[in-house]
Length: 66
Image (cartoon, rainbow, N blue to C red; front, side, top):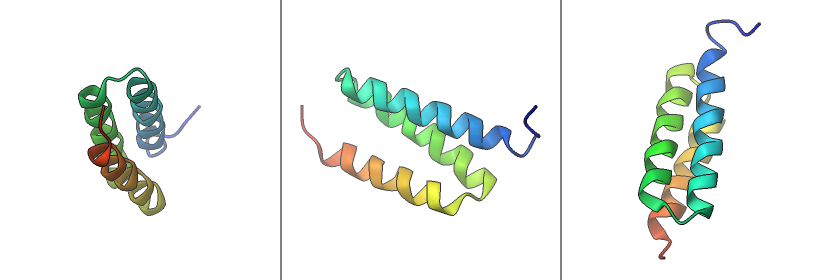
């Protein structure tokens, strides 16, 4: 069973996975919202590396067209 502090990582990972699927489906706005939820969860956990990765993904998404 995951501890309470690990739940933020699980939430972040789940939101990040959802964002990837939404992006591939062309749902950029929804993908951005899911990445933002992931970012909030990672920030709450203090997972700096995951915060950096998610911020880069948000920047990439903002720069993409389509």
